Image 1 (spheres, rainbow, N blue to C red):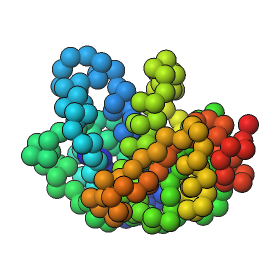
Image 2: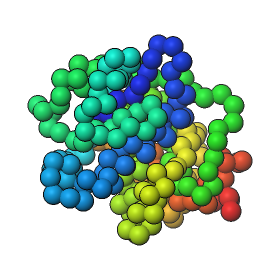
Image 3: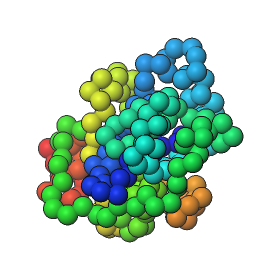
Image 4: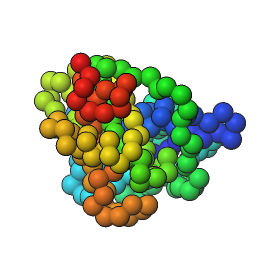
Length: 219
């Protein structure tokens, strides 16, 4: 799956907001109503599911960002996720976008938190670029949806798949990983991190306390 981040030189998106957009956009491509009908959207997703799932995150700005909006996919805020395709079939509008230069600085100050939504927790000690982290949270939202009951996922999708993202120190990440409701993502290790690294995980609503930044205390 190709993904594009809108990264203008002036006024780029905040890192946390972009990661939330990325997680939601990737998932909404998979949950789109067009995926339930025979045709292009469904065929491309099924072909992708049958192979090792990967995401490639690119940066766009100005006209390049506008141009890719015409390609099949879903845009959420600063991120557009595209219907998957073989590498040889990536449209030139996407293939011409740069993969490097997708980083964003850490956010300063308190972040918004929706206590009714799941929380994707990122291991900050891995020091992933924003582009790499965007791919990982995209995996996380998909795996979390796959692990939940269908009725719950449909209701979540109807609401636009609200979620939280938090980047936390290694000790907090380990505590979150021990939570019985955690759905982890292990990376294949093609870029930035070692193969098998647990990069991110998703906790269900109520399993992360935004005040303490730790799992299992919020209700």
